[in-house]
Length: 245
Image (cartoon, rainbow, N blue to C red; front, side):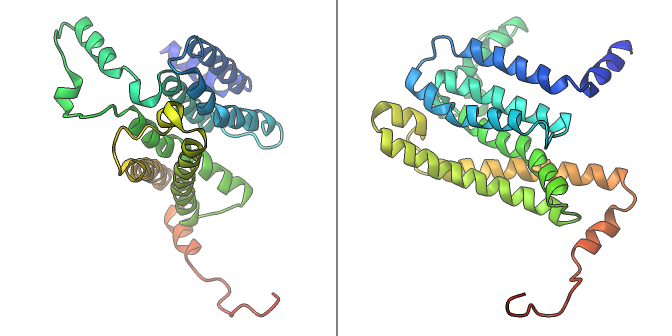
């Protein structure tokens, strides 16, 4: 089990976030080579550059846990793939067929096996947004706002839902401003009038799973979990707020 010990030591080293940053830079550079739609690739990564820049800028005075950085790295890595092809054209079906061929299963059709009628990579990313970003958001609430108990699980869930809604509005605005094929590629509805609603629902589901898993882990590991949850729901100052208070 030496490799597990080394892996744990590597994960705990202070240089781990720097490793993730360098790994993401290499990953981004490889997928930036000849993207299917260069203009759409640029649009997709405006927020990516802003997010990475913010994480680097806040590293010294508000460092996140290594787990949070890892979750964010995975999400951004998946996003880069979608931006390279555009979300509606990621060839995951061909990849699945190739893997099945390596395993000796010839003629495997993922779309037929799962009953897909469209490319669902964008659905995966919206689900991953909630699943992978809810925990880092919770960490910020706990450390910065010192939220405890029930509210430390509810607020991150609520923020994940809100950010998903804001992204859909931003996506719509960009598609209207840019227009043409680039705008449609960026929007990626694939003819589904309920696309935005389904994307938000999947992000909500992902966040719910992440928060529920976090709560379950804390329930098993912390003896004061139930007491903290109950205490957080109490009204500690029952007096009505006075004017100007």
